Amino acid sequence: MKRNFIITVIMLVSAMGMLSAQELQLEGMYGIDHAKKIVVATGHLPEGIKPFRKIIDLRGEPYTYYRSEMPIITITTDGPIVNSPAVHGVITVADADGTIITMHAGFKIRGTSSQQYDKKSYRIELWADETGEVMADTTFLGLRSDDDWNLEAMTAQPLRLRDKIANELWMEMYTLPYLESEPEALPGIRMKYADLFLNDSYMGIYALTERMDRKQLALRKYNGSLRGLLYKGNGSGAPTFESLPDYDNSLDTWDNYEWVYPNESDTAIDWNHLYSFTNFVMNASDNVFKAQYAAQIDKNNLIDYYLFINALKAMDNMGRNIFLARYKKSGTYFYVPWDLDAILGLNTNGEQTHWAGGLMSNGLFDRLTQDCSEHGFVATAQTRYASLRETCLNTDYIMQKVQSQYDELLENGAYDREHVAWPNYNVDESQLT
Image (cartoon, rainbow, N blue to C red; front, side, top):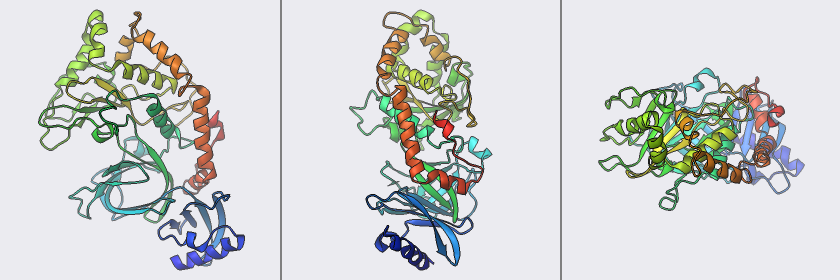
């Protein structure tokens, strides 16, 4: 079947003088969906040749053949992918350079909101073999080496680019205070677009992403005592500094917080650190709060996070989709954003909203914005904002990044293929304005 496909395409494009037989015979560099009659191939194109779409004859029937430089991910599973447990399968990632990596893996549906969509996001755990008893690290598409990955459907993002653009902006804007000691640390995640074939069905455009965890932030490892810490906020309550219930150290959740790290087998969960910090924010007197907050949570991080969230009008990142981290035992807390899709005029369902009222905030920022002293939070934030408006928070700069990413997806035929995979999807250029 592959041989027939290769010969057919070679005859078509050789007559046009576009591609060589050698380029088309790169093993594993294409995917076929016979139900949708689509072939997607990747590989560097000759100079002067742009990604293209052609009708070819395959098995006596017309198929649409797409050629671009976007990577292709192929997943074959032993059964349907569900929330839990992970189902065994094999993943192959092929990029335009000809690099092909195949691994055993466990797959499950990722995210609560993903359940409501036909196009779902997935979590991928790389396994050393089909048993899944031992994890296996590898690197994909120039990202970090790890055994844990996300495959984002971006269903609630009409242009399939908001989360990627926002993470890039955040990493341009914010620098971790311990970066000199941990030069590999990143305050956000990197994302790479790819075409996905799942069990021989073409699923459209996805983003392969790193995960936010101890490794990404290079937090100090657990050594019997709590050093680096990482929590994930999943809603209102303690994450928004609106409630302070008792905690139970036998549980890995506390009032919409999730314990993320340490996660070693011998870790003893202790919510007291986070409880004490939340109690301080909620109940310290004004004088004590203003005098001591910078000793508990990094002031520069607070300013950058507040400006970032409000500049992008991020609707869902002040108690939910937010990580709270600590680098080491003597370190201060800092925030890291997550799932940045409800931004730049979209609500959490991916619908356009024209709401322009108030600033995004939570109980901590409500108190911080009362600090109007000469060198307090408000004055420092104003100075920082003026500087950022000349660089990465400049409106023209942001729109240029959006347009550039849109043009890249458009040129590579991504929006056309997304419509093939999901006929109800149509790219809306009005989202660019």
